[in-house]
Image (cartoon, rainbow, N blue to C red; front, side, top):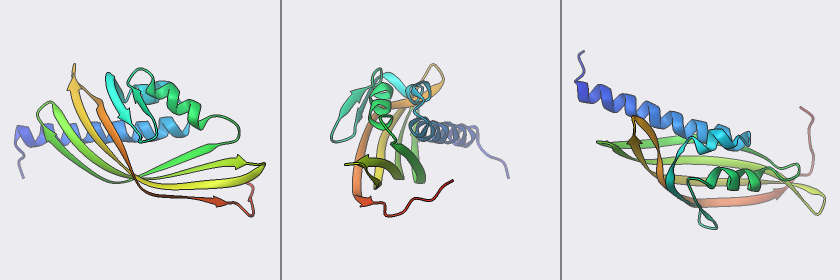
Length: 150
């Protein structure tokens, strides 16, 4: 089966965009400022609903939210739909995000189901996020009654 050059280019673009999404999740979970920052163009806008940041401050802002105290985060990327339109692309990504934290010296876990609605742009042959809107579908906070080691 032969593929057209356009099909091959779109498949490569989808792969690169998916890699950006995965790198973002890994960067947040590991509080890796450089990894997070590498996902955004410097003039990007990230609107998470309760906060907004630009491409130059978003990585530090996220790490400041996740890193304090014993808080830990874990993101799972689910369904991802990517539509390529030349040097722009539009993606909707489903995520489950988990975060452990303490409130009043008691352990809690927040479970969040959300979607990232992203516009990507390829500049200088690199795909990055130029606009993100986080859409919360649902979230919950549960007190942890028992912790297991390792």
